[in-house]
Length: 221
Image 1 (spheres, rainbow, N blue to C red):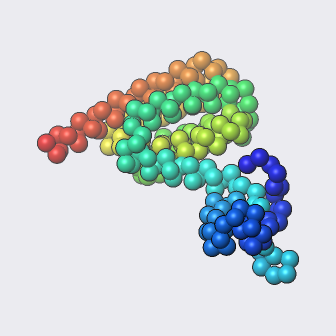
Image 2: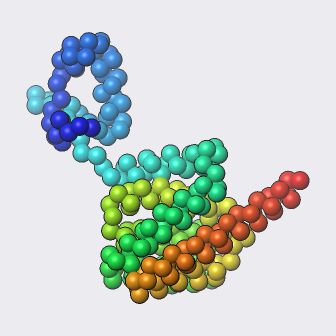
Image 3: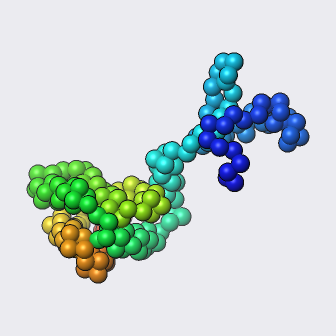
């Protein structure tokens, strides 16, 4: 964490680590297993083998964060309101940056998703997948590595959860219209218009949450 050990640097042996930290070798071995499970070290066999510092893989770390977020939503540690608020505020920041840093490739990718979403024959699963890709591209267009990492859990975890709850009560055409407004704003580099479209999409989604929950209560009541 403090940078004293560099990527690919060889760690001391188990015996040396045990002596340094005044613990048993089984304790050291267990610690090394945990570090390996977190992809922080890697092992190599042979005369020149041992345990070496590994370079963190951003994709694996982001997916781990997304999995943890999904679990927290599932067990109720993160409420739907918290989820919607966080997603909106973070996406507004991403949208503002995207109006400055987007490329033609980003615009083309979002346009392709819109064309798919307009297809009435698209299944609910395919529409949801396209929805995730649309918002993922919006985040990528912001050009900020840390925001992209943090937003991975929002887009990859919370977006599917949201879709799963409201897909029976939403109007696809409404979602597409909001997406069209977002894309147009990014094309025109109009951050204010993009933020407004995202806010309206969030409000629409919240209403569909309430409608879906009311229907669930009616069915179980």
